[in-house]
Image (cartoon, rainbow, N blue to C red; front, side):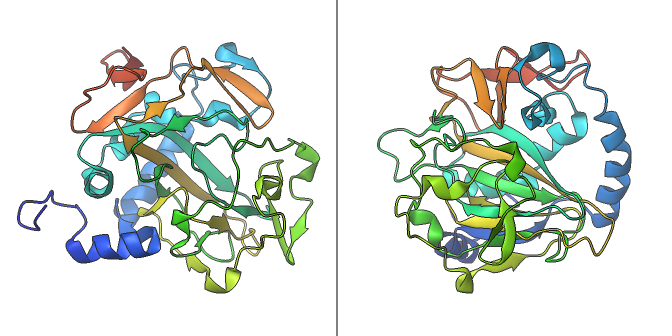
Amino acid sequence: MTDTARAEFALTTDEQETFWKQGFIGPFPVLDEEEMVRTWRSERLALLDRSNAIYTEEWAVSGNTNISNYDRHMDNDFLADLIMNPRITDRVASVIGPDVLCWRTEFFPKYPGDEGTDWHQADTFANASGKPQIVWPEDAEFGGTITVWTAFTEATTDNGCLQFIPGSYRKMNYDETKVMKYTPDRINNETKGGVRRGFFGYDYRELQIDPDFVPDESNAVPIVMRPGEAVMFWSTLMHASYPHSGKSDNMRLGFASRFVPTSTHVYPDTDVVEEYGGKVSLDRYGAVLVTGENHYHHNRIATHTTTGHPFRRS
């Protein structure tokens, strides 16, 4: 794709070289900072209404779990517009091709005093349950998902911004066929390498291929962001986050949108998502085609509606 023919926000040749060298690019602007602050002030109240959420209490199979906060783009117009924002989708498509699904979104809040997140990678997203949630075609170079992490609030080293190890996305250091033990008492109670780190009740080190592996944090870079900025990265990139120091009372909040080519199998051979101490039904779930066309029939697909929420499984 030449620069003259490319979509407005697609990566330039130089930006693509940077992305493939590092495994990430950004931060880049998606929404104006004042617009993000103003809009989020109202939308966070709107999201308290879960009457149209696809994972409501009546749909929860079991467990009191943050899974219920997945995929709120399915019932919230602001989040639906965000995952289809060309400042995001043009960049994603310039890396993984023109036909793209958003298969999951999730919030990542970090409150004052919260621990950082363990260094980790995700390929099939079987890391919590042992069951793959995305499977790329067999001829694909490698798997994972493109994650676009949008800052809804300021993200700094003091309040828990992301950290990346550039270039680390091509080699998996973790075996996702193993199963981590969920122990909620671990949350905010562990220190690793002198840093308070955990993984939402799991210990990600249990998945290490080499039990003696220690991430080389000397190469790590912090991803400091303003509200409305985003960063795009392969989920197989070694990434973590700092603890929230508690020096301010402000929560750090990010919104992760996850994208794959339409050829990828999403939630193959399963009707539930089970992780983090809970389980929810996929009865109302559907992946969203955010750009291009879908020439496959192996995924649950959601379509636009005019019935009070943005998408409904077709």
